[in-house]
Image 1: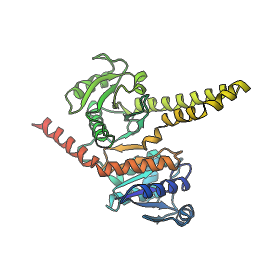
Image 2: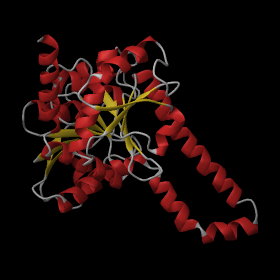
Image 3: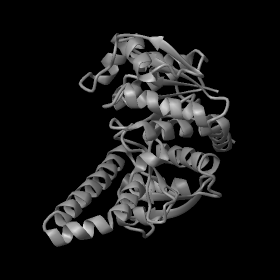
Image 4: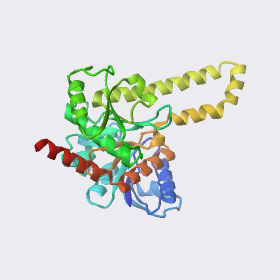
Length: 334
């Protein structure tokens, strides 16, 4: 198995990217990694350790400030674009980048291509829950607008991933809505509810945003606009909560002593809320696994993203999604 990685994407590239890659090749059997980016900087980060790692040199990079579609079309030798090209040409089974999200989505569409029958790919992170099992949320921003049948496709892709990669039998699929009762919501959610009820997934009905971290469902589907708001709200709430806790614990000598006593417990709680522990956000619906790692990813997050991509390849997630969508379309046309 070969995975291509944009070594220049993210806030801590290439050091953390290379470090995560080194950990991955040492722990995942039969894994080969292609690092795409500035060869001099990559080799410096490798520090002589290059077993099962090859380098494709390029000086061109897509930055966070670049307009995604224009950058992918004009910067054809950018590390992110060349990473996707490795997959397109069959030289890699999957690709990963912690760089510009919009550019990776564009490269996924224009270079890697979609699965036949999938109208719109979905950006899908796995988020933490209180029981530690996590849930898949899609879409979180690949498409701000969606139709009901797009949400059905999201549900199918999320179910296949959860079953094949996360080993969840009959994943529970919920529809993000303003209430749990049947018939709630706007025109989109009402139509999606009816179509999901007849789809080949374990649909449990509507779920509310306040319940999603409680593990109410294994897969939660929504349009990219609502999904992105939900994701950013969760991120912001977690950051604010830990900032408030830190401020409280540092307010007096008594609370500082208390902080020292519970330091390991707080660290464990922080890790439990860190969704990078589950890997990156998958761009589901593309012709091969494409993973968007968080821009601030450290080596551990990169390793988890690589492990996630490897599991998707090993368990033939893309092929299963394609065959399921094909069977669904066939049934609708009969």
